[in-house]
Image 1 (cartoon, helix red, strand yellow):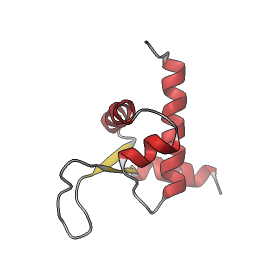
Image 2 (cartoon, one colour):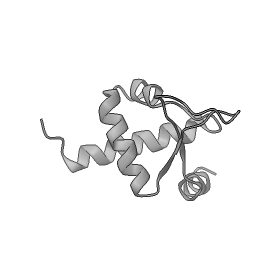
Image 3 (tube, one colour):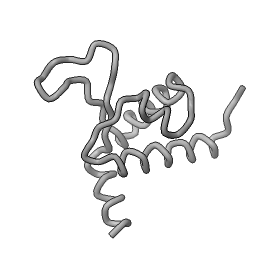
Image 4 (cartoon, helix red, strand yellow):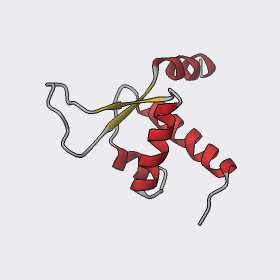
Amino acid sequence: MKISQEKIDKINEQILHFLYQSFPNQPFTASIAKEIARDEEFIKKILFEMKEKGLVIPIKKDNKGNIFSKRIKWKLSNKVYDIYHKNNI
């Protein structure tokens, strides 16, 4: 089943909004998928597309520097966070 670009754009907006609301926490892919009620693999694909556009940043290590074996946390890029912050003041 093909999803229209308009719907993908809305999903992107939902992801960005969730990451902004979650700040300073950095949710895992599974948490993002659960929050916006979408399949985890689909959300992972979307997040990597957003990463290529410079919208989000993957976090692959915990606070101690240990690499996550299979999971990835996500956060907004600084540029996107600043734009959201200015628009929500």
